[in-house]
Image (cartoon, rainbow, N blue to C red; front, top):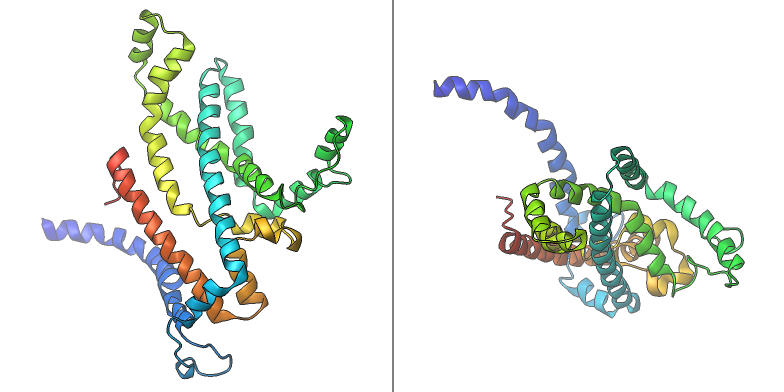
Length: 299
């Protein structure tokens, strides 16, 4: 009987093979390239003939004048995205939960969810036109109000703010659906009991709705710690320029310029490996916190 059951499950195991092959090719084979961080890579020479330099590239990384700046920008932008990206969906989910007309509720959900499916290639072109200081609609409205045009994508003061707000606008619709799903799990009897006790809609939100959403809020907040060094390469690369490197340059864009534009492959690999190690530590910490505060486990 047991042998027959194993035979019946054999096709299911074969279904895993394509996924395992892809993971092997794109996730494990590239591990070999990490050795570039410990050698002096010389193009055209056999890889095993490259001289070993140990941790010299990592020492040079910390001496780079742009690295500390990029590291600080990465933490700042990523942290702002995490915080605001948590608050906005919660507020929108609470507001949508108060709508009684289902057609309006579904229509708003569709509109706010739509940007999630658009790539930053498309959205960057839209934002460049909208935020243009000469003909952008945002600066035209500011001009009607008597405010001088603002160079959102060319001013170091405004660029991080623009990056964070545009990212939240793109992604908050997806998180809103998650929080709306959490709202459906709240026992309606709790609202009835609160209403009998004289609680208005605001107090019901404070004492019933938010505590009911708290586990999923804690879970998503802790899991997002793993993205503390992911400030969004595709977004920033398509929107930034040399004039905003001071506040817009992040680790990923620094790696791109160092490795692909300046051909310093070993140095770029060392920067990327440093980011990966820190991200691994943060992801491990986030899962530990998720297990402790939200009782969430992967294994």
